[in-house]
Image 1 (spheres, rainbow, N blue to C red):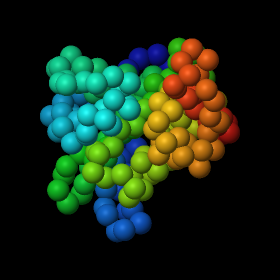
Image 2: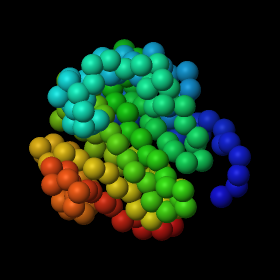
Image 3: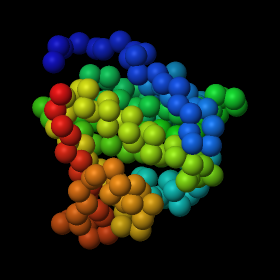
Length: 180
């Protein structure tokens, strides 16, 4: 992999139409997306934030948000889904590759009022496609055992699910990727 900073990866911008005709624009996160991400987090319930961050978070500092949006595209990617009609943020999926660029850890967070419409599935498929294009051998994540919706989606996407040996309340999920 060539050293240096990669430019904004505009080739990953996508227009997605979900099953119910809902039109979504998905693009890589940009360093100027602080307000967009803050708006997104404001539409996520405390319980969904706990399921994603494994902690109850009451407010998000500028420093925290900057950590979510200021990415080195050579090692990480995050996609934000935006409603084409209202321009509201709907969800974010991210992937951070390890130091040897062999595996990546993903995370996903949707607005709490949008579950069950296929957006999470579409974002997961996009991050898997991205990981394959980067030559990663696998992607993985950790999910709280009570997050049954996410565990079911991972199972349907072909992830192997196991109990985390350090924390029995966590499930480790891993998807082996076919190399291209």
